[in-house]
Length: 251
Image (cartoon, one colour):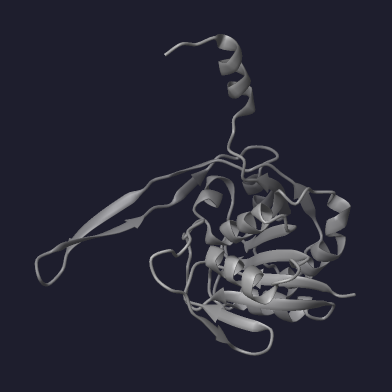
């Protein structure tokens, strides 16, 4: 029986990344795509609760919504997979990296988080240093390879895989490493300007400065190696929890 895969992203249903991976995965799996109808980058794990959501059919297996990536997963699982969860949820391929601290902002990663909360094996996939017009075919083939071998990783559904591919260099992706999340600092810039009516508005931007930590996602990708990071949502700092419990600290 073919695997039933849910595919989503945060770049929108029209992005080259999601189109390439959809075409590749449907060769051996039944793939349903539910993706935003517009870019939702940096939407993080947000749900739309203050207005109704709409779904539009592109064809039998592809749908768009006016919501976030997390909305896409929620709608797909509850409306398309009513009686049985999908075998896997894949978010991407994102146009740009999602490494280190940036996973907390990422809509791409958030969709995989939602899948892991639901108990569905999930992965978020991104391409570092993406440039418009870059072919996603080789990246999509690597994703298909991961899907076929995912069971070998032995990951619990509560752990999702955060995948970052280096920029496509016209050769197949063959080298990969299991990595930790890296660390970076942004030189955040808030630019204030004034509109024609005299009211202030703001642009938030900035460029990251990454730490070259051995074994991290950034370090691997910088060497042209695919980074595979097992990731989970639980934010509990176990060591500190045990220390606090044993300290007898009174406030």
